[in-house]
Image 1 (cartoon, each protein chain N blue to C red):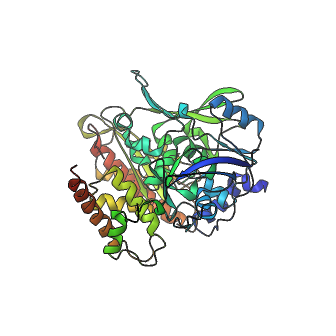
Image 2: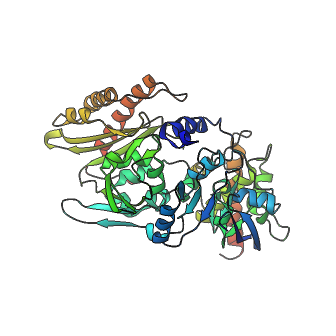
Image 3: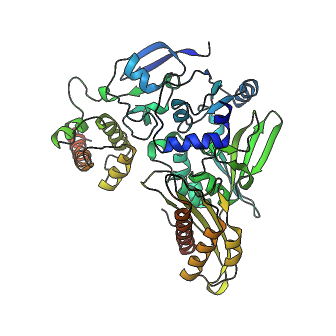
Length: 165
Length: 320
């Protein structure tokens, strides 16, 4: 069958085996098939970044990927950041800084920041601003979002130090 | 639908897409194949007329979302690691990079080999969209897509790159100069795909620069200019190459401006003059992003700027 496929996608640590239309986008798969609606669809053209998730450790615009392309992959969405009820330092920072207005861009912003800090835990303001170019925000002017990511950089450095490395 | 598959048709609709008037709807139906070897991919391409190749998907999937492309089949070659590499061929006369078609923009942008041998390619590649696009978008995909406002096509024209194509008839090599036929139309015969791009080294002592005018960082270029400047004796210019993208249906070299630069004293006056000459050689388009007059005026500015920067870099590459 070449118009549908059975794929296994591990999302936030849970493997899901589903038969899906080949034309189903990863964003649609996450939202509509798995009910993970934290990943938003803003433009559907890969320009706004609201749909940003991690696939195999890399940030990806999920509206620019077919679900079948994630077969065998590890996907992390915004829902996967908190562990055992404990918010991720990025989530805590966004709340503490008041970085959320309408909230539509925020999951994508957080995932972009998460991908950045994975690669570059000591990201500077300039580097943060550069990476957040992947994501559009119409509300905030980015000011508190940048501050939140900077706050998370600090918090995660302290957290590492606290755990002895 | 046939008109939509033509260059002008696709251009008209793609312009509306870039104007963001396009509204994504459910993707059209297509068959999907995920070959594990290049041979398998070629067999599929040959047997499915109207198939499109899926590489990074950063251009194709939006086209599918907005039904600007309605292929009968999508052949996913994104996992063909055999086409993902950056190598060099060091020969005295014509040393060049060989870059596999599925190499991502991010790999081109950050490659120490590219930065050493052809830094302008890394510079241009680094201006594509934003980093997430560059993590998945590919060199071959960008060239095959042949967007007039894209960064890599004009850079390939600037550097005199050669595309290596493979199809049912075997291997074919096409100069970048001849590869781009019309907006979104490249010299790819049915069943052909790009396997690699050969990019000549920038000679030591020659400076290179790429500049583009965008409304916002990461946008497609309204005008893009690439320049190579080889200094001559006594503060003159031995040779100069200029390529302009974004302004005309395909990226172009501005040969009259290049000829006018030969042997002349280097300096701001020359860059300004060559910028103006280059702009006069262009027949730019007007669209909702910019008028032809604006594109021509900005081409003069950006060519001037690229030349000045290239000259400043000559003899020692910036680590940009």
